[in-house]
Image (cartoon, rainbow, N blue to C red; front, side):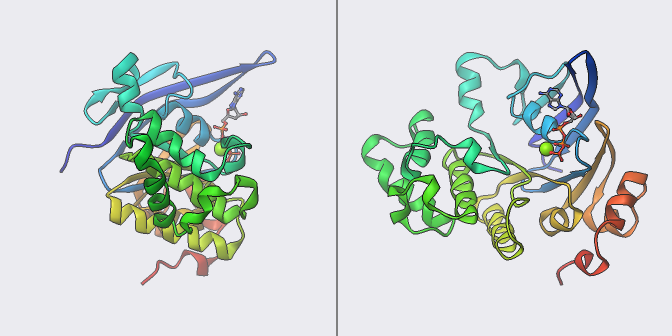
Length: 261
Ligand SMILES: Nc1ncnc2c1ncn2[C@@H]1O[C@H](COP(=O)(O)OP(=O)(O)OP(=O)(O)O)[C@@H](O)[C@H]1O
Ligand SMILES: [Mg+2]
């Protein structure tokens, strides 16, 4: 077996707000093999986004460790951290919240190229155009503002921005939850195709098993801050072992669970 891309061990995170303690992550461990998609499913409040933010170091863990590409990820500082940051990118449910509202799409995509020194100034417009085309948008979109495109197109820009950093791993947090059904399938297809062409590893979060099973090789089920079950996608769908897993399977119409042939 190839060395895992990421190994998370015993991650814990507790929030205290208005005197109330919430355990968002309770001893969470997971492994991501290179080139695979792990789907992370669970009810609202089960800790999925907290796990994503902790893995990206957007939020410090209270305890636990992560090895990323053979390095102790949480211990990296300074220059080593800046270099490694590029390896994990994130795509959120609402790209508007993640973009500077005044920037053009070209500006949004040029930022990672500049920050990570991936293209000098003269080469950036060409690379921005190539990134747009990679996610199925015309290069001319570079001149538009993020407000001047549809929700689905905005999510394509968010994916292009993640790709710009040339990551090893992309964490998707409910990337299609806000989109209409038809647009949703297009975006899921794009995500799957990019994984193959770019050799990417994905952690794909959703609270709907019907979406997760379309893209995931394996599924992890989260409940109250814990991963209660992990297995190959068909096994989880056919024979869930945990009560949370059974509830998630039961919530999806039978037809939507048929695997594509
Ligand atoms: N910054 C915060 N301060 C206090 N509590 C928080 C904070 N962020 C998350 N929580 C709490 O931690 C728990 C897990 O939240 P999280 O957002 O990770 O869940 P989720 O599985 O992503 O839910 P959803 O499906 O609704 O996005 C919830 O009880 C939430 O209220
Ligand atoms: Mg969430």
